[in-house]
Amino acid sequence: MSKRIIQVQKSASLTGHRDCVYTLERSGQEEVFFSAAGDGMIVAWDLRNPGNGELIAQVPSSVYALRYVPDKNWLLVGHNHNSLQVIDLFKKTVIATVPLPPLAIFDIAYSEANQLIYVALGDGGVGVISADGFILKKIVKLSDKSARSLALNEATQELAIGYSDHLIRILDVRSLALKLTISGHTNSVFTVAYSPDGQYLLSGSRDAHLKVWAVENAYEAHASIIAHMYAINHITYSPGGQFFATGSMDKSIKVWDAETFRLLKVIDKVRHAGHGTSVNKLYWSGYCNQLVSGSDDRTISVWDLNFSLTYEDYTLRD
Image: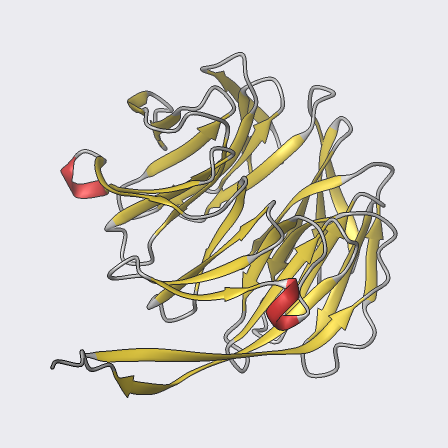
């Protein structure tokens, strides 16, 4: 039976943040990504020359969420204060500040088709903001517990929301009506992600379980995996969609086959000089197939992944 071997090597360790690195986000260039942390700094990094980051902005509180808007070249910044900030990356200036309730913004999604911004709030609300005029149109509140994670499926016009009440709720993007409530996790749902082909919704929770939901079968449970020892903080897909990675409070990163959901590789401190504390966010770049991780240890690691090797695994018989 053919089995894939993954070679992993840490190519860089990026320092400069003075607090936990909470989020990473792509840019319009595969080799450039953004980071933000508890120190309020938003930094741009170039994987071609990763040693020095460029400070893009500084906000007065922790930043938990960033979202790049490709058709506008904006960076949306959600911080633990009372507003969403919009940075024009061409001008490198803040072009809008959208007033919000004084709550943490845990995640941000953007619908290009509908020109709407969605923000997950610490009181369970989901704010809906017009990208044309930056007007807060509505706050949808379906739980008294935090809305922790968002995933948008433009093809089905559905927004998946993971909550601290252990549930996932699916909203119709246009009407904002509740279409479905998904139960299965036993703790806060910290991350949700649609597969690139839209076939599956993946969810990771404080219960350390990775769950797979079949979108076309009314989000029927497809797989449930005890994936980590502690909370799963983030799920990200590879650029080609063949693989995905999970980052956890147990300090490890795991790489999975996106078709079979089979574990392919564990990246940790003992084997690969990985992070010493919680892995909070991942970014998988198309530039040299590099996986980037941000951690409570205030560092960002860049991992070179080589998937090219396979071997034949034979079962020996007497």
